[in-house]
Image (cartoon, rainbow, N blue to C red; front, side):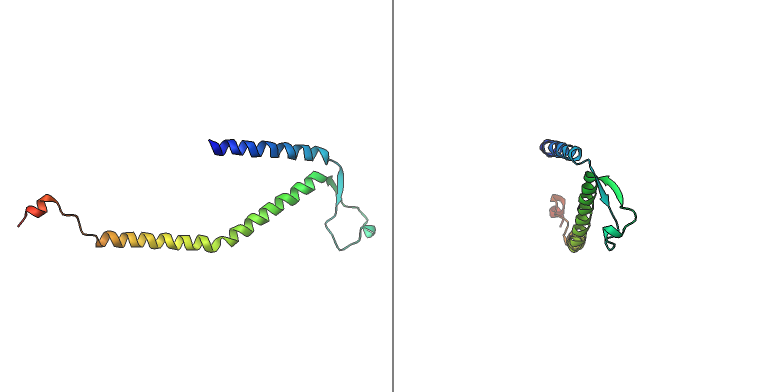
Length: 111
């Protein structure tokens, strides 16, 4: 319940800020995908897109690249965790095989 409330408290203002930002940055900017050619030498100036789309695209690419980098950085930890789980399961099986069955009253009464 608290997690849901915190999510709303964080996400609603964030969405409002993004909407206001988008409305404030609707002007077109020229996006060119060839950084080696000077802008004076271009016959076509590039693609005109709203500024907020450019910024959101860069933000999305950054989040995706950061997530991928984190996933690769955590790979050794995930591998170690799988190895520890396998070892714990093996030791539990070994312990259960070694453990003697508990004695009952009937076992004690037998000669």
